[in-house]
Image 1: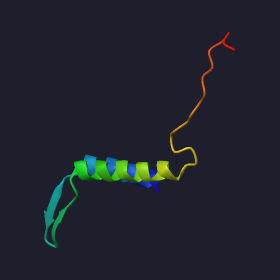
Image 2: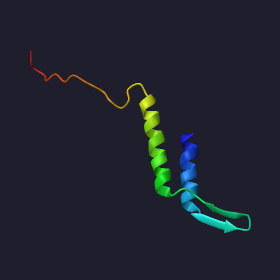
Image 3: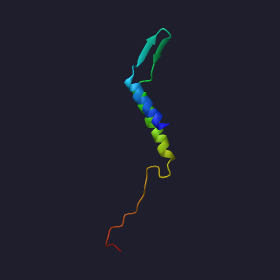
Image 4: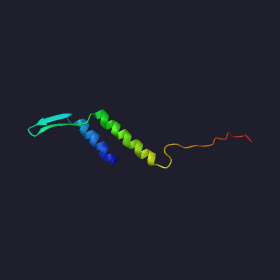
Length: 65
């Protein structure tokens, strides 16, 4: 799904923002909204991972007792 969204953003950025024809007019979401949606979905996927991007380590300097 993420690859499909990235490809859709690329396609929408390459195409026109508004199209008018005999059947009517079509307008896409602004690119800023598409990028915000991509960031939201990426953050939602990151929350599902077990580490959630945080790792806690205990640092012990050498030579200390």
